[in-house]
Image (cartoon, rainbow, N blue to C red):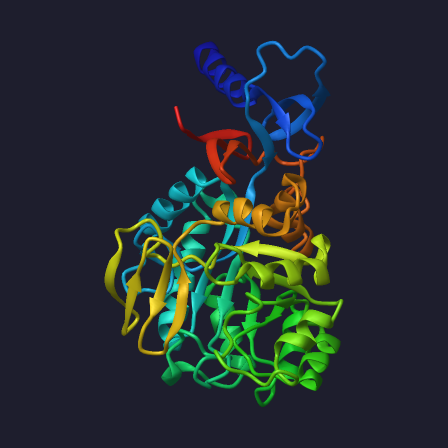
Length: 403
């Protein structure tokens, strides 16, 4: 009896022993004011932020909150909308994005057969439960199928799968995604779009306008229904539009809309980026990559989703429609390009790539270096307006080191 009691007591003691506290200290140049700082981390949370007077032993790297990409279609051969998506593939893409300084992202599924969409969201939902990569996936983005079927406006989305909004159908998709869809891109001019937007917003989904040919009245109605974003403003639009009446001006002029933009140096020219930046201001812009699974692969021709795509070293093209199909670079490339195009400082560039998406989607633990925030951090240098990632931390854990 004594032996049994002793064994039970030992087991109880083992079960009650607290886990060791995980501590770390990072030093570098704070992105926001270029002060030298020390950041103390405990159990994945920033617990100390100290400005240092002594510059000795301070590494010559910037410290910034991890980048947050709310629109990424795939990476390094992993297509979130493809027929061969697996949990292992999602893990592969996530770990590759860590190398680019991306600590959080929204896997984006585009217009497709509804059963494929549901299947892939179910896989993404399963991957999101993985304790290793789950912290990097706060939610998902559904881009389509409720978009414009018109050439140019539909971009690389296949016309045969495009349709009007269907609330019951979306509920099925959301169920397959384990309620993980937190961003939906649609066209406001479609039949039933406005009441659909209201239902999405009431359910907690952020609605963004994209791949559309909506009028000023359509855009205003969508905003009044609760839409908050414009998806890759300046893209997902026909090559030739009316100079006065087109989808760009209503979205650009409406202060209630935050514009996501692809600033990879190819999707928008310098003058467009400068104009968008000056009009919307740093508070109302979110940088996105819109990267395809081809990002990181060798240039050449590829078949993806029944489409022939051409990957150049800089961008992905859809020759049949004479449009761009997506980006070939991670969001970290946008940091240097937006600084070059607008002459904004690093502070504003990081705000558009991290702080703003965290704020818009109420990711309250992310997007800033502050005591109490989750320790999602990136250490990097800037050379020739290019962000070179040295280390990436997610939830206080070192997930990538260049060394």
